Every structure is written in C-alpha cells, then in structure tokens.
Image (cartoon, rainbow, N blue to C red; front, side, top):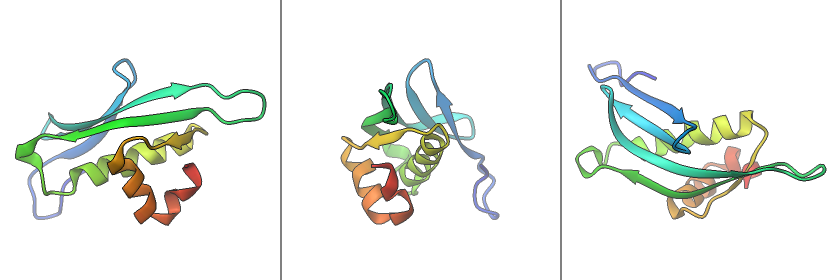
Length: 105
C-alpha cells in the first residue's frame, strides 16, 4: 500500500506469521502491530483468529495507521476463511464501525 498521493511515505501492511502479528510499516519502519492467535476449527466450524492487542508507536499516532492495519488484517483473515474474536478493544470498535466486517465476529 502506498501513502497519500501528495505524500512521499511508503505505507504498507504485512503479516509476520512467525511472530503471529500484522505490522504496519512507514518507510520500512514498523510503526505498529496487531498480535493474533489462531485456533483451528472443528467439524464444520471455522477456525478463529483472536486479536488481543494492537499498538501504534506514539510518534506515528493520529494518522489512521491502526485502522488501516486492522482493515487489511481483517481482510486477510476473511480470505483465510477464519472468524474473528476481537478481544482487543480497538479491533472490536473497528468491527462495530465497519458493518462490512461484522460477519467476521
């Protein structure tokens, strides 16, 4: 993902499966992350991805980076066929404010 057209910043989201988190990078610097844990599904039930914690470094705050990161994290979660357990209050609020994500919870 790129920054705003007038911005020279490169902003992108990546998944670090080894660490179990999504990260948002600004010019290749990790500006924030959202931890997750996956639990497999049983029978016909979908697996569940729990998001317990979201952090954006203070110097990157107020720029909408957490929302951008969670939006991408939820899309990738949907693409994997997982449901979401939003124990992180930020993720829970994001889902409440974005009805297109409500089917994940």
